[in-house]
Amino acid sequence: MQLYVTNNNHNVDADNYVKEFNLKNHNCRAQIFYLDDIQEKYYGERKEIRKNLTVTIGSINKGTVLNINNSAYKLANVIDAKYIFTPVTEIYKIYTKAMKEGYPIFDKNIREYLGNRGVNKNIYNTLMDPIDRKNFFYYNNGITIICDKVKNSDLSFPAQNIGVTYDVINPQIVNGCQTVNSIYEVLKNVNPNELLEQYKDTYVMLKILEIDANDETQKQLYKNIVKYNNSQNAIDEKTFAANANTFQRLQEEFEEKGFLLLIKQSDKNKFSNKYKSVTTLKSKNHSRLEKFGLPETNKASDVFIPLEKLLQVINAFVDGGYTAYTKKSNMLKFNSAQYNNAVTFILYANSNDLLLDLYLLYKKADVVKNEKADNRAPIPYYLIDCFAKYECKERSYKYILQELSTKEKIDRLIRLYTAVTKAYTNTYNKTTGVDYNKMIKQAINYEMLDNQRDNLLDLF
Image 1 (tube, rainbow, N blue to C red):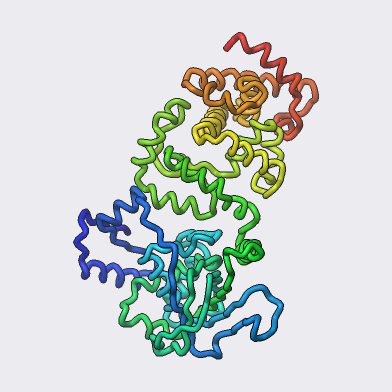
Image 2: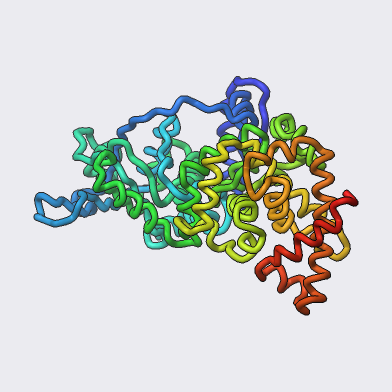
């Protein structure tokens, strides 16, 4: 339940009522959005990002902290570390401080918040249960923070269950994003005067690793820690490859054009919440969708572009439809031929308009195919392959925008290659006895494809 207020006159009673409602109703969530919140929700204006932050983390006593100090213990390890048995209220405190000060505490984290579902819902419900929350430490895998420096704090102990504190400089949460967000979602509704008492026996394991980000020898260690700490729950190398700066830049540029590139697991949830109203998206993408004869945007998911699918389209252009169909598993495999082909293409083309038009040509072909009774023509990746080979003069990206500049040109391409791929399928079957489903997984017979195009070209 979302309540929208068209001014910024915060009502304390209403805020408190919503908090009480959330505490009493585990299966329903309520939130108030004031005018500034509405503007942020629908227009997503960026706030100034703070680059530095120091937070204080506490534990019961020194006996509930494991110190790994290389110089003191004469260890050969690269880094110092602390394993801290800490109350969840300490996690809530540092996350709240980071948000308030505009500090991106999850910048280096692979997995952003995926919403209150699945495992996250179980975390939420455990924290809501006055009895079971005491077992939270045993249920949870913990949180990992990488920081510039961690040192003993001079602050007085702020709570009855805190006997030792540490200052953590420039923390980055690299594992435990779901845990941290779930803790925040629950604790933000609790009366601040009752928070410490209610959660005094609810703990989580916090691993703090001190790494010098400017040290070349430690950069790879940093990356590996992020990777191996996020290796569970279907986080694989595709996710890490998708975190590359090239794709992040592309995501921002696509969004400016009204299209949403999905490069992280959390992006569907993030964009669906950000664009519950698609007015802004429609104003940006209307003319391009109209040019390709595609439906207008009614919901955010209408303009989702999965990164893996985009890379398949690029590989169909660069290396052919056979590669796009049979090498899908390599598209986001770092340093694979298909991954490198796609990244090189993106960098050399250096045009988000070009990439969007190429993808939408594929999308249009797929829509037309699905409208046909036999659901077979045009063959989308074959169409991209033909477009690259013939219209773009042996796969030169320089011709893409020119050849897709008008609705008339696009419609002609769809009609031509619907006929060509259908004729190719029939001829291939008669010649080899191989049916459609097996054919698209076999190497393309370009001589046969050339002949079908030559026979049909004058008709279009």
